[in-house]
Length: 57
Image (cartoon, rainbow, N blue to C red; front, side, top):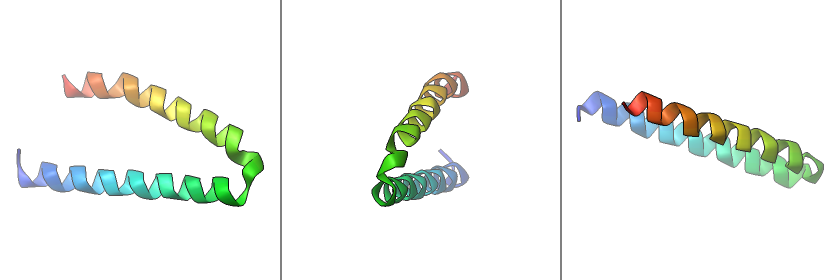
């Protein structure tokens, strides 16, 4: 695995962690928004579950 791939993977993980932390903060500050956030995350997870196996091949 090249260094460029490792750097991109690390940056991608950091961006995802920052996004998740931001969503957790919004859910903490606005409890009424939790169901829409949950639905959005489930949708994003479904898309990721479909796209990742295709990209890996």
